[in-house]
Image 1 (tube, rainbow, N blue to C red):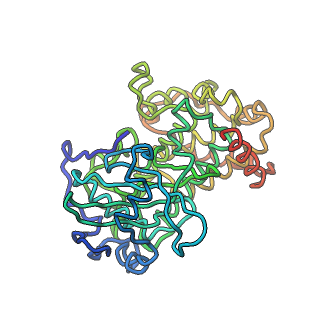
Image 2: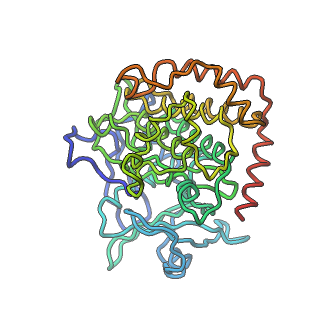
Image 3: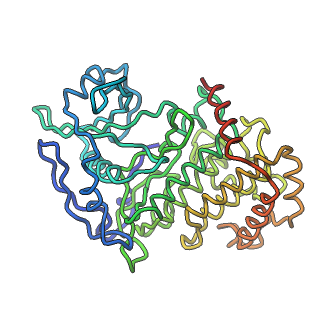
Length: 427
């Protein structure tokens, strides 16, 4: 699903969030004009980039042609609005040892939007450093008779994306444990962007296809072409053109152009339901009442007896019902109509960790279901306001389910063993 701009439908104030960037010359260096936008720090992303830019390798165009066998179609592994992505091999920095397998993204020279996204990728990924973010190894900026040549070199992700494993039948079904592990990793990546840097970063295009999977099926967030710095101290939001992917973009952001970290939280809520159901956020191939995922799942409230009907049938009942309910309630919290009511990503991480622990100890899904059924059944909303979003009681229910995990002894080692068993099954 491609991303697009909503600016044709809406009127937004002048964009203030992204740093202004100078035009690239034929040289290798990336030149940035300092931005006035950062969170509570005196240093912005461009300033942090100036400090860390030397960590990126600068490639020549002939080097990357050699790495991809002349950008062979046989090595083409993806394509999007930015351009094409190729699998390639490059030498190590010291020239010794085995070649490194990489993914090389090549800009489509005809796309001006692609150039801006290329600049943003270099800027943000040159600063960001976290186990759950894709690593940018280097870039190439060259001008030739055929026009500008802009390329990015990333570490290679052998297991494609979460989107591939959820919706492409050619891939083996992701186990319940693997799904939880991926969600935790993705949440940790977003928490780092929102809360772990001097300058807050908002991804702005979080979706299942932008969650790549490494050799151990650990999540790596990718595609920072639309990323923006968060609001400055004393400001509640950044006013910017509305862009994103239909089905994932937060409605309050689309309507107002007011961007906050809670816009990413909404998108994460959509992905939570995709993982639970095995359905896309928008699927025009389904019957009309089921085409919009969020409208469909609203009929099956997390605290209702018919809730299990939405769970991905490919799991073949191999999941914890109690943990699934916990995740659905977390998704409802992320999808609150008011951005202020949505949780922080650090809170999301904590709930997902509790759900994972609950799953490890829930040897019998039926027992987990009985524990939850002891709660009052509020499956029918009392008014229209309840239909628009989860009730205030969702936090109390989340607290109840979290207490259940206090009696569960789940270990990280156990999760890793099951995850490796899944990996062997895929291979």
